[in-house]
Amino acid sequence: MNHLMKAAVFHGIRDVRIEEVPRPTAGPGEVVLRVLRCSVCGTDKRIFTHGQKNVVPPAITGHEIVGTVHELGSGVDKGLRIGQEAVVATVVGCGKCIYCQRKQYNLCDSFTALGYDYAGGFAEYVKIPAPAVAQGNVIPIPGSMSRERAALIEPLSCCLNGQEYLSPQPGDRAVVFGAGPIGLMHASILKARGCTPVIVADVSQERLDYVREFELGLPVNTSAGDAVNKILAAGAGEKYDIAITACSVKAAQADALKLVRKKARVSFFAGVPKDDPILPMDSNLIHYNEVSIFGCFASNLQHYHQALAMVSRDDLPWERFLTHRFKLQDMVKAYAVIEAGQGIKTVIDCE
Ligand SMILES: [Zn+2]
Ligand SMILES: [Zn+2]
Image 1: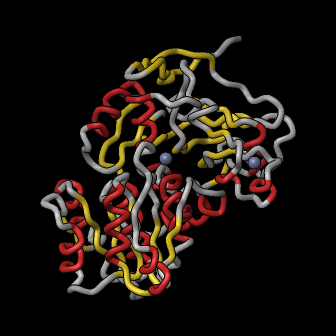
Image 2: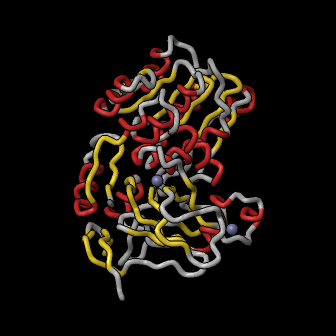
Image 3: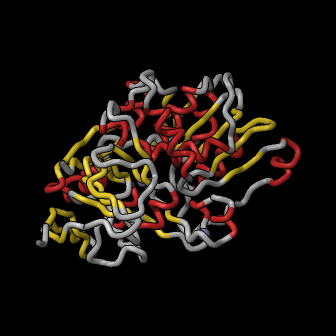
């Protein structure tokens, strides 16, 4: 018997259709999840508007997946049981390269990913391929955890990876460039770790209003220019120990370097447009001031486990991050909301 499921199928740029497609079944080593929620990442929207080379239509995207274990393939032995709720780690390492040997799967030289190379979570069911299951990518969550919080684990895991290099300490002065979902998550983590002040800079007042509303830090609107002086003034003229660029703007990287003090740690968390990546900087400032600059790409398994613990905290406004929710049927509306820059995080209810 051939079972069908509903899925949002990407057929090409700005062409996503809700269709009935064959429901996946679990082969040896594989796991099929019934998808409960799948939040929409900035990259999902970018695939919708621009396409991406490892997403070959017809394809199902979506990698911020929360589901229940529906079917276990033969030989799956990861302590998983039917009906258990779980989130899914996105990146699947090749298992052979030097980074995979070091268990740094997100840095694998030839990684594949759920929602890109494999069908993702904008569907009623998703199949987790055997290498992903074997790597430990199906991560059980407590049944008591709200699906809304669980839907934040994947993006939060990326922020935790970036911040691992920064080791924020209580009393550290921090500045975050960008008040999108990722910038707000960074601010939340910095606040949770006792940094003060936490400045969040953006050009959108609508986004900055969330910073104040959620009490995540001090919002600074840099739309009228002179970001450096505005950010300095907001922090009583003193420089910062930590700076994170959570926006794809090269000027923010340059500004971050101007705003940090001695022994500061800087995360170039977001990439910049690939046709203009060269950043002029005074390397002597890095040298004399012992400033460290770090990159970040996606996240590794331990960051998911850390994110799971972090969304369990009740002192941060996790549920309120999900400002928009759509049924799978309305996938295209979700992309429109994100394209318009509305709200913080949009989640698809696939139940
Ligand atoms: Zn994501
Ligand atoms: Zn590898």
